[in-house]
Image (cartoon, rainbow, N blue to C red; front, top):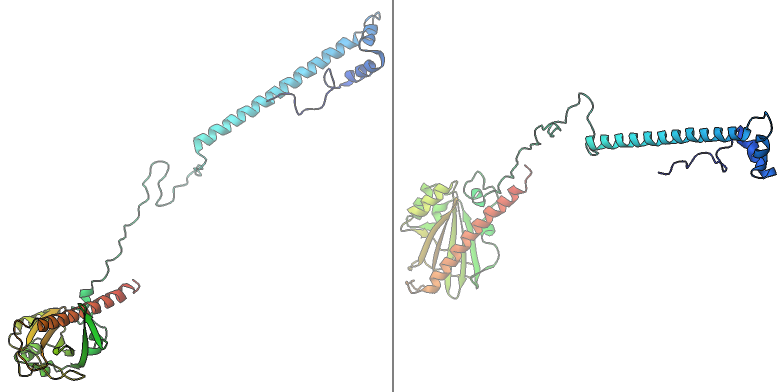
Length: 306
């Protein structure tokens, strides 16, 4: 800092006081020293020039002390403010006397850190839950919804769909002991569809129960019976008086069955691999359709607001 700047403008020799004004005027008229010397040599006359110089020097000293004092005071105030800022922290203004930290936040005295309750989203619904009990399996169902479209491609083979049918009298479309088994375990509906290719036909049937346990028992208790084949819509009668290949399985509250054979009336033998393959393909298709039904209902339930 440069002291002396910013004050009143002064001429050479200091500020213009009452003495300096006359002194400066005489300098301009008579030369720099002629007036001083003339006044000093007069007998009994005070040395006015010396007195004026002494007064000017004293005034300059006083002003210098005032400027120095003001500068030191400014520095002291700045240092105090800097110390206060460092002590308090620019981002943590001091709390008012008696104030407490907001709830849930750590205080400067080392209070507890914020705590939040852990939340975990609920797991997605299990698709099988929706096809294991009538209480949750509420979506509409029919032979057309289980076996849609005029054909289905399975393992690269295209099977044409023939006739379809649905009945609540489950035992009426069965043969052997299957009807009794379905009735005993509480079958509520039996839906069938027939598919054919190259002289081989298969009827696949899905029996519906209220619980998974009922469907499992119906599948396990079936021994000598199975479905009645369903002909029509381009598929001639089959497996009415000949030996055919049958299967029985269950998933959830659904039991599904197949009967496959030749439309020519020929008996099925263990060497008839195309017949076995056709029956297995359509049994797999029924299984997948039941799975899709569960997945569709689980996805719809997941989109519902909590």
